[in-house]
Image (cartoon, rainbow, N blue to C red; front, side):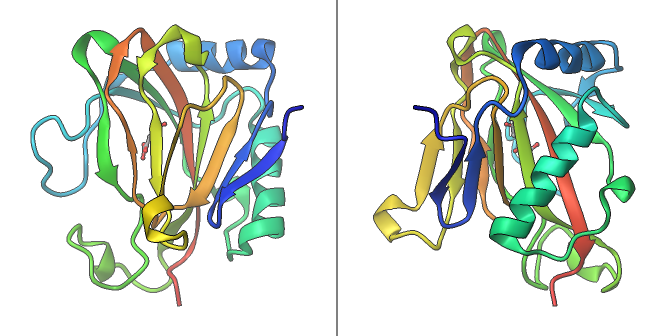
Length: 204
Ligand SMILES: O=C(O)CCC(=O)C(=O)O
């Protein structure tokens, strides 16, 4: 039996079958129709730290359902203060290619504390702060090798705090943006995902 909502660690929620194959096809088309560019990082990163192509989507097919799902999980699990989803930044369509072993090394999407190498800390308290990171898998796990996703959840026992998994097509992972996470190198095929961040005021 499928578990539709699975809290696989204290701070990581996986939801299966959020979108069916037809709905995913529409989102893939939104991504393919958009201008893609090489992904970059804020601040200094070593060569090869992040290798992928991305496109920014200001809207996509099914975005209302996407936002409602995240809102429900936030209410049930995290309880973070978030801005209304109408104010959300664009979604990131991402492609990692096996022929170039594309990947994304360990990183976080927004710091928890005030000290941060990337300069976020100098942002005023009322500025937008990434609080929840959400990944929707657009590729069938059989269509690519490698490309596992890892999240480090320090709330788990030390020998079990890294969770590594492959999301099913149409499934979502939701976790606080300050948790470190990575995409392992893709070694065959193409791994496509849609990534979105939900923002609120800076952590108090
Ligand atoms: O593509 C993914 O699955 C995750 C990408 C990611 O970690 C990011 O863009 O911050």
